[in-house]
Structures are given as C-alpha cells and as structure tokens.
Amino acid sequence: MHYNMRCAFMLFIAMIGVNADERPSGRMWEAEDLKTRYIAQVARLRALGYPAMFGGDSLFEERFKADRQPWSPYKSVYEELFKTTPVWVDDGNIPMLIVVPRNCAPLRWQATRVMIDGVKSDAPQFELSRVQDIADSPALQRPYILFNVNPGADTYTTSVHGAENDLKNMHRRGLTFAEGIALLAQYPDVMKCNRGINEDYRERFAFGRVVFLGASYGGACPCDNTAEEFITFKVRKHQGDGFARGYFTPVIRRDMTPNYSRFLFPSCEAE
Image 1 (spheres, rainbow, N blue to C red):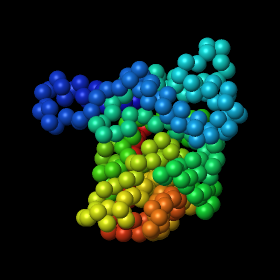
Image 2: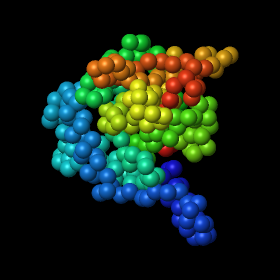
Image 3: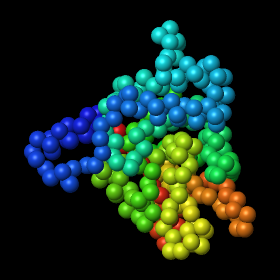
Image 4: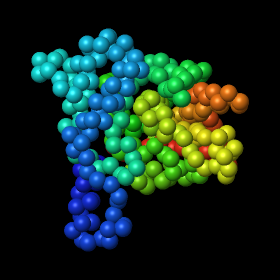
C-alpha cells in the first residue's frame, strides 16, 4: 500500500510543478529490472549454505528460482516481485533484499554466514530467544523481500534517538535481526565508513557499528528507556596482521552516542 502511495505522491508533485530539486531522488523499478539482482542474491544464499536449511538443493530451488514450474507445490519468493512491483527506490539505496526469517533458518546459524574479508563471523554469545522484533515488522513464516533498503551509511553522526525520529518522519523503520543478517550477508561492505582524519585513523576505524533498530534484546524497561538494548554488529580488528572478524552483541541505548562509536542505522520502508 505504501509503495502505491509513494507512486501517487510522485505523480502529484509532477502535476503541480514542484521544483525538480525538491522531488525525491530515485526511480521506479519493475520486476524485470530487479530480476538480475534477485538471481544474484539467490546465488549468494546458495553459496552460503542455505539449501541445507530448506531440505536440500532441489527444495531450495523450488522456493527461490525465478522460473518456477507451474506444477510446483511451493510458492516461489520471486512471485513477490510481481505482486509488489513497480516500487520506488531512492538513489543510493539497495533496491531489494531477500530475507530468511528465523523459523526457516536459526538466527545463530545465519549469523555465522556473515563474512568480513572472507572470515566467518562469530556466533552470537547471547540468548537469541530474548531478541524481540518490533510490532510493525513482518511476522512471516517464509522468506520475503524488502525493498528500498537504506544501508545507513549517512547516519554515523546520528544518535539513536535522532535516527528513530528521522525514520518515523520518513515512514521507515529499522531492520530486524534477521533482516540485518540478510543485509550483511549479501552486502558486507555496507558497514565500511570512511570518516577518518588520516590514514592511520581510517585503518583503525574502517568499520561502523551496524544497529538493528527493528529488534530489541529482552524488551525495554517501562520506567527507563535507557535500559533498552539493541543488537549491533561490530568488526574486531587484530592489530598488526590485518585480521578482522565480525561479531554480534547487545548495546544499551544510553551507550549509543555518536561520540562512543560510529553507529549505522539501516532501514526499510514501513508497512
């Protein structure tokens, strides 16, 4: 519904003659425009071992291949493109992202699919049962697609409170844990943030800390929202050998200030 509203808005501002510089910068994407990206992401899932989570290669192909046989008993994820498209995608955003929810593949297993410089990330060392998705995120029982995903590269100087307000005003929301894993698995370079003052600084702080605002750890304390924890992804770099490894960890809201670390807040369209 929101995609149709976005299309209507674009048509409206064109009719009333709003200055082109004030219009949202981006374009409409059709299903055929997204097909190449879809196939590439499915290939990435295949390379990361996801077929094992769907009962083997043949069942995985039935769920994800773009040209599904009409007699197949499974509903292909690719069909979602035709139901949703055309969609508006802002310039600089990722047009689409395939998400595998936790009931299809355990989050702990999916977390180790994320690779930084070819090295698998550590499995989360906290209780994943305490990770709670926000109320307006999709509680789907099968893989689905996010559209117009902003990787958050321009939010590293923003506080968590500022990010939440900005997303609300733009009718967007933060990513859930599963959606964040999907983003990092497909596009591990999104967390690279070149803010350095000099070469040594850039080398030491080459990565930002990605925050999944669409989920909280253990829920929020009703009397003190500073006690709320969000799941973040960070890269630990070993000095000297250049070795880097990613890991997930909860961070308390009150510690999430731009001066503490460079937090990136990826987001998607809110329903």
